[in-house]
Length: 413
Image (cartoon, rainbow, N blue to C red; front, top):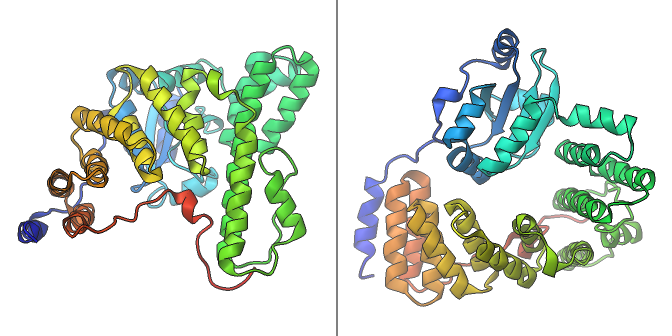
């Protein structure tokens, strides 16, 4: 309790948490119809960003990518408008079938969608994608070229990427199979890379759907393709979940997810993964319980980045290693570097928790209090609660989301 009185007095000083900061000069003020009208007048494209307040990747896109001068210059060539998909943009999000964040939708001057970008991209990759879209090298153009030339390598890449961003992994897999036949499988590495991406997407979507049905306790059928990445779940669904206690049914689903993810991970040569793919593949391994492989890939990614890694990405890696309890010394080093680059509440919190589990309790508490003071509002209060638990020597209870998949529910399937 030596520090707790001081901690409690901080609560009163915490202000309301800040809203998502915006670099406003490149963002169009108005609704979508007005943005399309402005694009028509300028003969350019509309870029619509859908975000939410709770989306960390949305904040990363804002702070790491949209604030870069070269990115802002590119956005000025468009009519860029943004909407909170759970507030003022809720109806638009439904109209464009947005189910993950951030999602960027590109419209022509008539308001027709020509392409979209799903998720966070660092500045260089974002610029590359947007410049291709602006010059007409977009999803619709890729589909057209693929119809004209089923063996076109560039067209299949753009088509698969676009189909995945439109929540159609089975369509991507089908086109890849047609491409392999038409091209005589002359580029097996390209096919393997794209098929892995499509099957990972299918795996993720099917297991998300399985979890939702499980949590709702419904007997509704779930269609699961009998293919690599979903085969274990297919067999489980076809056979029917046995009459077991809820926790044992959940364990069957979790085990199937782990094994199906493993079948996908065996398709790649872990020792020869390109540096540019290490982060994403590590994320897939981590999300599906393959923590040792994820740690190995994350550390290889870290070693390959040099000075190019952003504070946000470093913080993500340190946090995931902390959650899985793997390579904690290296995780602490990465967290220190992240905090040194950006002394923000989230980087302070990650470093504080790693210091705590390594036994540096005083340093951990001090840093967590600093995070609370900087964050303010509800976030600040949550950090204060963590500091209190550290002071009391309690376990923090943090664990990867895979450990609780598919969650707990009431009722039977």
